[in-house]
Image (cartoon, rainbow, N blue to C red; front, side, top):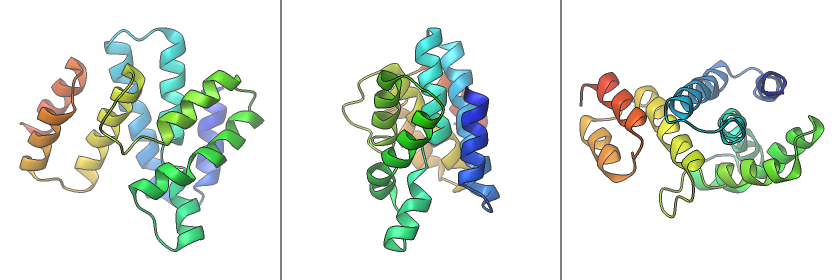
Length: 161
């Protein structure tokens, strides 16, 4: 099912290889961190699905408003994510959690689960590289919201922080 979801998301982001590669990298880090942190199979499945879909609101925001930002991504992402997940036969409870994670993936407060925490960390790992983040912002992120040992280790290793 995750492979089908990934193909749907690749099709959704047609013509935008940077966006496609972004979500594939976030998925890979999410899966790695989730496995190393010992997530159960179901939580890992939901995390992987959310990581594949996390930026689905970008294209919608650009088409609707002419621009996008983190808050618009959170606002506009759940509806198309729900549509895709429903078409693939995801369970309603899983769709609800996936949509919640998408609707909060730029919100670093009141993190209510390990799946949420890992999605934030994985997205930051990719964004920090893609956006050439400063060592100061990387260190701030590590001190502010990185909590998993695996995420911190990857951050330290990648950026020599």
